[in-house]
Image 1 (cartoon, rainbow, N blue to C red):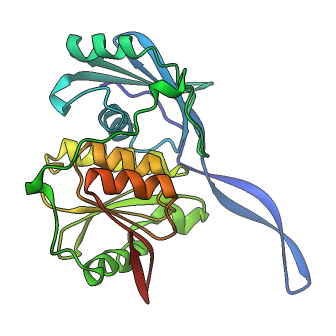
Image 2: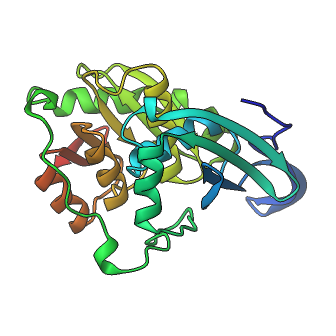
Length: 265
């Protein structure tokens, strides 16, 4: 890995702040959002808008959560470069994974909002997850454990504390202890960063669950199901498609996780 000077994840901008009828100039700290290009074996694949931090985790997590590689071992190396137009991550992956990638013929342009990321046809949508292995299930996971993990989340969100603009994805043990947190302006990116970090630490196969500071979109559920992560808990609501995919996969899905309770779908 070679790393050029990356833009900072937080930048200062002048503002005029008005409060209680009084207005004055000030400086605010804002989350950075830059284009991040991903290429595999020299072939450009996606350009995502992301916060320029933990980009190696992001690239590995994206490759895993999108099914571009089957395991971290299929990523042989990674190079990170930064220039005036943004950042680029060049991944070298196994030939078998690269052959499958070329067959998919997908050209992506990601966003922090919602979309189908340039998928060429409805037939190319991957909305049919395999059932989670029985040994990955967390039948004993309760709402108390989920809420305990969320209670620890805000203290682990330094970028959100500075800017108020970053989502977080966290990994918690079945008893609610929060182990890892990743942040990004995009909720999908935050989850990918978390997945990449867990993969690097060899934790993806260990018991645990994911929490997110956003709604539970179908993309988040599909990413978790693809990696056999047994449960996803969100601070806001899911969509109907997210619930349907979770049920098909056997993934436990919680929404509206607030201090007073949660909803399991």
